[in-house]
Length: 164
Image 1 (cartoon, rainbow, N blue to C red):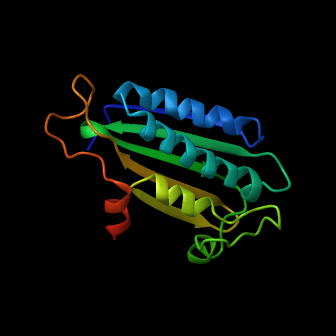
Image 2: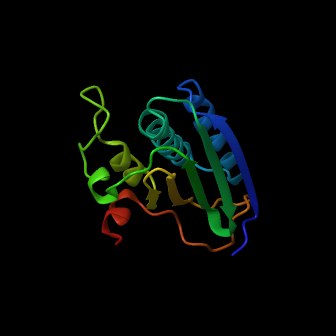
């Protein structure tokens, strides 16, 4: 299925750009007229993914982060955060709650937060080549937005927890 609209932006992995990334994603998704809660969920998920790039992928240097947002019929939003940093050797371990390679000041909850605020989360990584985090969320369709008439509503947090 082809997106109805999309955007891509590349920015350096400076901590000041985390706020820019979440604001840019939210501003772009706003054209679908999401609820305040849906927008807050996406902003939080983007913030966590970008912070992971800054803290882990480029721990000792500045590198490029690519943010892509794709909008589909029916209120489906796909957000990709890609880096060309150090990569993740063991993705299942990295996704375990409380696991971190960032030292005592890091909580190890980034992937858990991303999972809880989106409908689907996929992490692809190659050590030494980088990581791509893909998050998907279906927004509740409102009259007048770009979603399909009669599309299924957004998943509740409880429904998301039951999904494979």
